[in-house]
Structure formats: C-alpha cells, structure tokens
Image (spheres, rainbow, N blue to C red):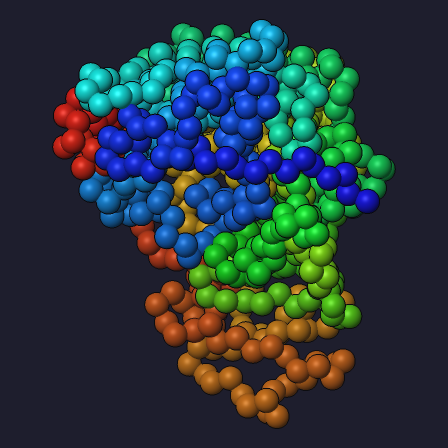
Length: 598
C-alpha cells in the first residue's frame, strides 16, 4: 500500500499582475494579515501554498542539452542559430515570473504577527527562505546579475525601478537564506513537502553550482571566491552523509535497482529518496507522461550520451575497436547496466505485446527510445501513480565528490564513500583516482579542455553525473557551470547503419527492418519481404537531410549515423551562457542594463 502524503491544497496566494504590478500588489484574494497570520495553522497553510515540486515532466526537460535530439522549439538552439535576441527572448522576466517572490516576501513581512514560539516561526521562515533561494538561483542561472528584493513593494517605492544587483550580492543572499533554512527547518514534515534534508540537498547543489561556475567563468572575475562555495558544498553534503538517514537504493539487482527509482508506485519508504512528488490516481493526484516520453514525440536519446556509458568491466566504450561503426544491438552488449534501464534495448518487450519491440525510426530523430520515465504497463492506476524523486541521495554523493575533486583534495576513501557506492548499485567496478588521473579519457579531455590538474578523476565524476542523471534535467546546468557550452554546437546523431539493407534490431539475429534507397517506393503490403520467422520487414526510405526520405543518414552508401538536423550552431562565449532582459522591460525601466554583449 502506498503511504499517502498529506496533500496540501493551494491557498489563493498567487498574484495577478502586469508590468510592475507583480511586486507591488496585495494578493487579490488575501484577507488582512492582521486577521490571518495568527496561528501555526495559518503559517503552515500559507507556506504550503508556496509548494511547487518538479514532476514527471522533468523526464522531458533535457531538450536543451547534448543528451537528446529534439524537434521542439528549444531556446538555446534558437540562440545558437542567431534567431534569438532581446526582442523575442521574453521569458523569465515578465510579471508572472516575479509573482512568486512577492508571495514569499509577503509572508516574511507578516509571519511575526503569529502568536507562536520562535521555533515554530523559524521553521516556516526557513521554508519561505528556501523557496526564495530556489527562486533566485533560477534567476541567476538565466541572467547572472538580477535585482534583489527582500521585501514587497508598494506603488511609488523607488526600488520598483532599481537596476541589477551584482551576482555576488544576490548569491550571498541566496546562501544566507539557505543557511537559515538548513538551521531551522524541521526534519519531521508532512510527506511530500521539503524538510531539513531536502533543504540541505538543494544547499549543496547551489554551492557546487556557484563554486564551479565561478571557477570556470573568468568573465565574472570571481574565481578567487570559488573555493569557499566548493567547501560549503562539501560540508553540507558531508552533513547529509553523516546523518545516516539515507543510503543508495541497492537490493543487489544491478539490472533493476536503478530503474526502480523511476517507475515506483511508492517512493516514500525508499532510503535514497530525500523528497518525492507523490502521485496516486485514487487520491486525485495523477500524472501519465508515457505518450510523450517514449518514441519520437519531441526528444530522442543522442548517440553522444549512449557512448558515455562505460563497458560493464569499467573500460571505456570509446576504446572498443571500431566503436563508431557498432550497430544498435552491439551497442548494448556488456555495457553499464544503467544504459538498458534508461534507453530501450534490443529485446525489450513493450506491454501488452508478447514479442520484442522493434525500434521505430523517423527522420529528425535518433532511433533510440527513452525508457526512463516510461511506465511499462497498460493499467491506468499504475500509469498515473508513479512517484517522482525530487531529490536523490545519489546527487549528494556526486556533489560531495565533485566539489572535493575541484578543490584538489579528493581521496580514494572519500571516493569509495560517494561515487563508488553509486557504481556498486549498478554492478560497476570502483573508480580509482590514481588510474583515472594517469590515463584520462582522451575524448572527454578534448571536450573539457579547461579543467587543468586532477582532470582524469574530474572527467570521470562528470561522466558519472551524466549517466546517473540522464533525462533528469541536470545536464544543461552542468554544461553551463563547467563552461562547456561549445558541446551544444554538435548536432545530435543517432544509430549507425552500414548502408542500405536489412538489420536486426531485437538481438535475435533475425532481420526486422530494411533500408531502401530514397528514390524507391515502399512496396505494397502483399509485396513486402518476410524474414525467416515469416514476419514482414519494416521498410524505410533512406536519404540525406533535405530529401523526402523517412530516415536521414549522413552518407547512404558508405555507412553512417542517423542525423537529425543540418542547422549550423554557434555558441558565442561568454554571451550565450546568459539571456538578455527582454527589451520591453528595459524600456519600462532604463536602470536595467544588458550585460555580456546582449
């Protein structure tokens, strides 16, 4: 039975606003603060109304990264194509995007009216400050320098038209909020809401983000302060580890345990999940993303991601002979077990079918199909009742190891207590610092050429992060903080085919599909060739991008990867690590100045 959360009903604290109204209006439905902020119940009701958790749509939010190919209208692709500017990049600064800050600050101005103990007040203040820190870190990621508002604004306040505050000031305020929250938010909170340790996970995430961002982004002139943030990431992650309350979910089934985190009907008792977003159809809390996660709806796994997974013995896939010419079936042989729990593998059977699924190929996609986030069932209650892991202990361990590695102080003992616990769950060999540094991955070293010392182990921790959190909406932020935006200029590619002809995609040695020249027509059903099992082959007309083919290859005759687009991508540094303030906002408030070449 699922342990049900105490579902929190949103109270009407959202603010309707336009232009500058987002920060200078009372909630339209709010009653007088003197009448409302009196009891703990009042404080709880308001703060729980601020709750907003990531959900299973997160599995679709990797489209800005190099993990996927996508046909979606992704902002960073438009930016790299030169078609985006301050006239048409408008999200992130409109009135609605600032309204939650008004909600938070309204609470922080009025909570003290409650006739409750200091401990009770501090708990709810801590939660409000945690939400403010989440809000502002998102703003800093997008714009860098942003105005810091610690209170609500009223008509006529001069701060309505203030300019940007320096990133350093804003981040210091974010870290102060998180420190207060970490010190005062309770451990024991309603299921499905953030408590002390959820706050701590985000605290370590924010510290690692800013520490690495400052280290690698010389345009900020803040590299000298990077280590203090990395040390905070180590300290907070170490506190979580030392609490003894969490561990990597590992039942000794390396081919199942990882996937169980993403298809579970109940994560409330999972020792790895620090915070879960709970879904249950019978409690009117449901979400089914099957139709958009699997197949070629908007995103498909990229070959570059596929090649990041190690071999099962810990060696590099990219060290295999002729690795660039291995077909779909061969790509899955003897690989890190997480690959087959993330991407549909040869022989995978889709419910309610009895026979293995044959990969459906389509132009503009890679041929690979995403499994993470997909629920292999036809039962409505099952499809709609899968919980989402908002914060996982695996992230804590990776934050800890990466921060230590960036500081240059990571020991083998610390690596064994962090990253190698994650690898053990997958049945993978331990990562060894000396070996990693002695023989760095040449390909990854070329991609991340700005690391410097300790490169070998840092590269492997970055690989581990990519693999462990594929399709969990972390990769883009990682590329940005590592100053690796140039990796986005490579158009995603897909499966390799040696040329026209028949191919086995299920791993049984029997051909399932046939690629024919794009100039030919697909035969009528009664004319289609059958394989040795008596099953008709699936036909695809093959050509290069721009043709009317159904599958695009780089080169049809000599063998190549499937290709997804032909657009030229250009990532201008440092400009494209940031977004401009929408031009209409600059016109309304001339004190807002564009930075980094926008």
